[in-house]
Amino acid sequence: MVNSVDPSGIFQPLEGDDPRVIAGYRLTAKLGSGGMGKVYLSYTPGGRPVAIKVIRPEFSEDTEFRRRFKQEVQSAQRVQGLFTAPVIDSDAEGPSPWLATAYVPGPSLAAAVAAHGRLPVPTVLLMVAGIAEALQVIHGAGIVHRDLKPSNVLLAADGPRVIDFGIARAADATSLTSSGVTVGTPTFMAPEQAAGSTITPATDIFALGQVAAYAAIGTPAFGEGTSHGVLYRIVHEEPDLTGLPEELRELVTRCLAKDASARPSVAEVIELCGAASGQTQLRRPEEWLPTAVAADITTRAAAPAPAQTPPPPLEAPTAGAPAQPQGLPAQPPVQPAQPPTQPAPPVAPVPTALNHPQTPPPGFGPAAYAPTAPTAPVAGGPGATGLTATGPMAAAPAPQPPKKKRKGLVTALVLVGLLAFAGAGGGLVYAVMKGDGQKKSNQAADNKKAKNSGASPSPTEDPTASPGGDESNAPATPAQDPTPVDYKNINLPDEYHLSLSDEPVKPTNSDNDTNADFQYTDNSYSDDQVDTETGKLVLLDAGQEGSLDTCRSDTRFTETILTKQLTKGAQMCLTTNYGHVALITLKGYSPKSGPSSYMTVDVRVWRNAVQPKQDS
Image (tube, rainbow, N blue to C red):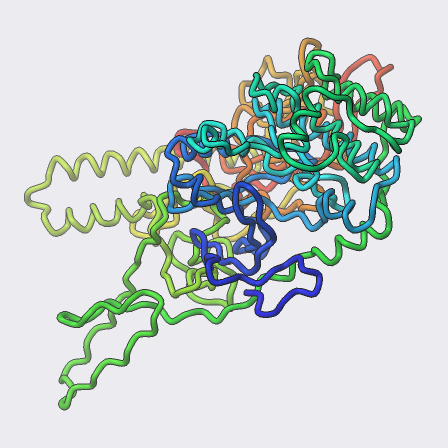
């Protein structure tokens, strides 16, 4: 927790009415507040900073808002773009709805202009092109941002990031809108939005023109003042573009057309940026921001997650003793006058559930998970990935919250019951033995397949062993990481695919094999793409480490990634239903003048790195 005032004013200390923990995320500082809620800094168990936005109470009390909020966040979680901050966790059902996104260490466009004035033309063009690419991905997921403005554009070292996309739509349906509350920021609204007409992707294009003008001029194109005055000018008057550089005039004026149908598409915006830059394709240099703005990035780099002393485990109260409130230190028991002749058996820790209706995605949020000094891992829990069950993410001591039932544990309990009551359960014994035999049969088939592929077979499941399975999307990891195998410079042609079980991994014609782990398609009727038919893909962010641990923990799953989202050097994690994990790095594409279409990739494979799905 921040105990002193940050000289930069970026990381503000928590105040009396600020929460200390949100669903297991321990809050360390306040980043800011807006019309929808407050934003706090927290950390994942692995130490990566995240921004948590907690919705204001007046919206939280509206049932329709909660329904829309849940729907919009689910849509936002499907957005995977190089210029968007991914949504990694959320809860629309708790006392205060919230969502967590990756923390971006960079000033907002609003803060940069306020501190350093207008931006140079090359920076504006690169920023607008990046925002346009973000809108391309957002609109592709069926979302209209509705509230694109300078404070929702963050300037990172490698390009802009668009945040809060689609969330404003949840507020449109609330009872607050009928009482005079305006959804969105009036200064950057489109005419149809100000008039209450139909909202389309073109609405975001108008806002993008406003953002571009603001960055280049230093003031809003339709001026400032009362909301009613600004909205009137947006609907009825022309923008004031005095001081706008000539290179940006066509781009801005076309985006600010009153008629939505006259505005350029996202693709046309990118073309206009390229033409204005005097290049056929924009190239983002290492230092795309002015020196003064770039210096602000270092001041916004979040400090490492604060270390915590692991709390003592909670123990079950003895019979007749009052229950100890959670979060308070246990009182030492009163010693009896005469010690008992036989020592009492140790009391097992009592698991308690956090009051949180949604379990966060694996690798995020639980209060009981955090990196600490080596301790005994919880069976079947985070101990398999190096995280312990006594971490300090919660403000008060809290054992690991119960999750979905572990299959190994259920089987073990059934077997114990059968041993105790064998005489009365013949039919049930047969059912359990039959199910266990089927498991072993499936395991043998998997081992045979792994043997044929050159990989080591997975061990036979022992139902009496410590439970390690989990029915969540993130599969359990083996006790020891497999050795990776690298395959360099694979030319993957159109309509061919890679199978991670092959040795070596090589392109295979899709007509001959239905197990397309990774496939490239050069579509003539739609956008080119890569996809998987046997697992899940994740497009890693720029700068994100391409490792087995990253591929295991990242849960931004998709089955299809458009190639226009991929730049040279982009990395993708692929996890198949058969338990194999791969890191795929894009090296480039075939020349347009060549006789065939293909993409070149490097593939690093960890075979049997996660628990395969039972139905695979």
